[in-house]
Length: 563
Image (cartoon, rainbow, N blue to C red; front, side, top):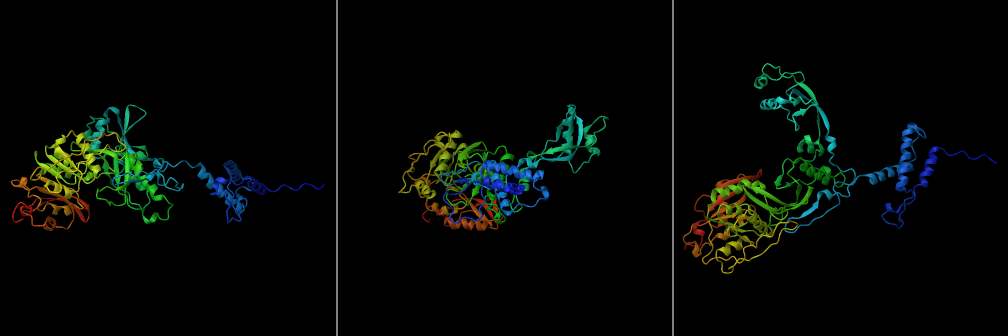
């Protein structure tokens, strides 16, 4: 018989084996139905077991040189495509789960919404999205140091710190050595080099009593993620097109960011890149601020009258019920449903301390959760607090209980500000305030507050008050016209007219005279005296937040015949 044919070369054997080990796998196809437009040269997707065998065989070929080693001829294009498919499939099968966890979507009622969790925004993200690798920040730097006896460490540190000689990095300046009798004190890198002597002034202040001062040596300092500031870390991670956030507002355990929209430079990046960068920003802020447990980002613009906004949780707990303490007053609130601005802490105290006196009655038309009403009540004032947002009134009552404020000191209303003024002036169509009740906050263990003052009625002749607070800067001026003619009741006959404290936004170039003209135009006549204009803070380079305080003019009160 003729001799058997020679065996095929190694390359041909590998190709035949690969073709046998690549059966059809329905998991990798969107539908079991046949493709109406089949590819004449399909790339088969192997099963998991054959994937591992083929990848192992491919690596043996590359490492040990079978079939020609590194100088062998490249495989055919069909086999190259198969190998790329193998590698991509292995990456997708062996990649660790995304740290953000499963996707979540919480819709919150009451104005603001938790639109999404940024950690879940890219649950189906590609493996090319950026992640926070804390181990990548490990490094070793050589810094100058001195070796001192352990008993004299405090004395050396005090003198060196007073003279600005200690290391300025975010690291411990005292290093404990293996020998317990000595310590290393790290010095500034830009002021000392190994072999240098300590400055003469430092030596004199140390008073070493004839003992020679230590010479400057060097130390290998290991630095890592914990030794760098949040700004340094974000500057190293974020692309140059993104601006590193430099500040955020703190509301209890919540950090509030106002991150901009995705820069155009990221349009060419994979989908979810901007969400991944926002997650990194949130996680770094969470890591570097031990008091922060939740990081949120404002989404879109405020479009409702309650001044609450949609937000997304970037990192941490999904708990938006928080507590703040200001000047001895505790405030508990749901940040997703109520308005709060920590930057107004100084203004809250200024207004109460400067204008309010014990025994006076304060009308707070836009009270929120009580940053003006509760300090005034604790000072001994009677407060009529109103807000259009029922959740704000709910937390106002919760906070009154938290601060042990008498129920008689605070009257809570849930009405439009115009209706409140008409109601207190004994308007014929509003004889009694509507009562309402609110349960405990959703998802919290807070006890239910007392009902908002039920059946609160106005005495004959109208309800008097000494001050009016209008903290709604964007729209408060529009409500000033309601006071014209509202003081004609008998109760106001022998009383001084109230002092109005209205907050507003004005251009930074506006003069005091222009501000007064704006107030008079809204009130409907001339003021009796110049208003007190106080700049609360700068909102932007072109806009300031002002508090304008003035006594309501007599001629516009309604109790004078010429009015």
